[in-house]
Image (tube, rainbow, N blue to C red; front, side):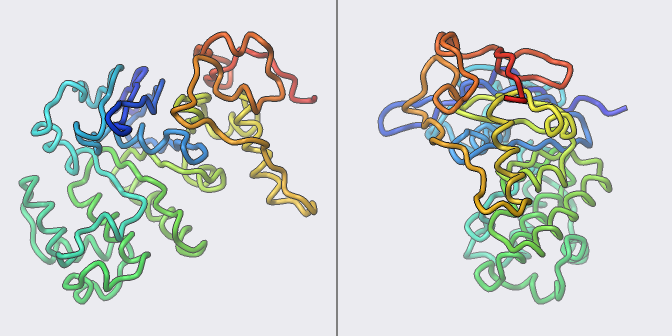
Amino acid sequence: MSEKLLEIKNMKVSLHNGDKLLQIIRGFDLQLNSGEIVGVLGESGSGKTVASSMIARIYGSDEGSIDNGSVIFKGTELTELNESDMNKIRGKQISYIFQNPSQALNPYKKVGKQLEDLMKVHGFEYSKNLILSSMKEVGLTGVETVYDMFPFQLSGGQNQRIMICQSILCKPELLIADEPTSSIDAMLRKKILDLLIKINHKYNMAIIFITHDFDVAKYLCNRLVIMYGGLVVEEGKIEDIFANPQHPYTEELIKCAGSMDTKEEYLYSLDGSPPIPVEFKDECPFYNRCRYRIPSCKDRIPEVITTEHGKTRCSVRFDKED
């Protein structure tokens, strides 16, 4: 039986916008069990990266804050911890893979030294052989040479593997991966996804995978959280979401992804653009792009409702045959 590892309830997050705080996340809920892989999917600006990074408190207090809600990790309320206590968890029990590894790694330190320092900070005994073994585990070759190289001397794929190596060195129970395959070619993308699956199985490590790609999510994840306008608009098992999307936005995303696999002359596209935070209103954020909308959708932000196929933030009973 998998144990509950993480539970997030109604998390709301604001980031600094000039001299003011601007609410970016207006409602994020997630329950994650040990060993589970959950995808967080949405268009650019949907809030998926901000919501996921706030779990590990990547943003400092001078950049933003959690306004409301609960983030419970292994029975500990993370929102109540100070930065010193979070540092004991971040990197050791919760690890993060950044979208651009070349920028996330320290350009002034050799990669071997960076891996050593991580283990030192968290009080782990280490040796060069142990680190070299971990580097081999993530598919790096010529590890003796790579160990003494700087990030700028490595390819994007090599840096991505160094980031993954760094994230698993302390054997964390939760790994948050922020679109780690978005800037690499298709062949390497599959290798990285297979590596994450291997890590998940070997260490029973739970993974939150942030993506905008349905094909990647379908290949890797057990469940999916769909975000739009700073809100979770749908959540469910991968197979349920593809077979019975409960929110109109999810339905449109699946149509867009599906049209790329057909031989039609024109790709299906969703008209309009997602709202940006300064445009957020107390209404359904998808209202202007939704073909099922009714006047009451503008009255308030829809509540989350549970269906036989998962959860959705849409109360309109839409007919998929229209």
